[in-house]
Amino acid sequence: MDYDGGAGIGAGLIILYLIIAVFYIIVMWKVFVKAGKPGWGCLIPIYNIILMLEIAARPGWWFILMLIPVVNLVIWIIVTLDIAKAFGKDSGFGIGLILLGFIFYPILAFGSAQYVGIKR
Image (cartoon, rainbow, N blue to C red; front, side, top):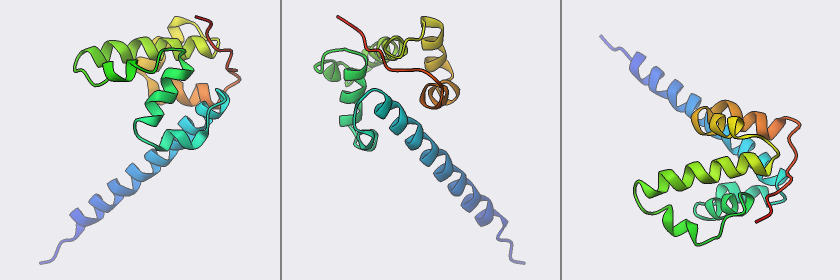
């Protein structure tokens, strides 16, 4: 007895994963463009982190801190809170970006938020 149901489920999960990945690419592309950065930058590993640091008005050498276990979590939280500030949002929205990024990043991308930057 042949049963190929598992293959169908696996293929369905791959398609779902690809749909989610494309959605996140679109969301991050839009966030980068709103911040005046090249949208295609979200596709390039390492460069996208550097662009996120620029959006958050943090120095580029913080990228090195992103390579250190545990420290990278702290840096990621700080950068995410600064990204919220850079778009004129409060720290509550920043916490939303941290805990529920799959909801708050699309709100940031497609909502009325405008990039105002951070002066340091």
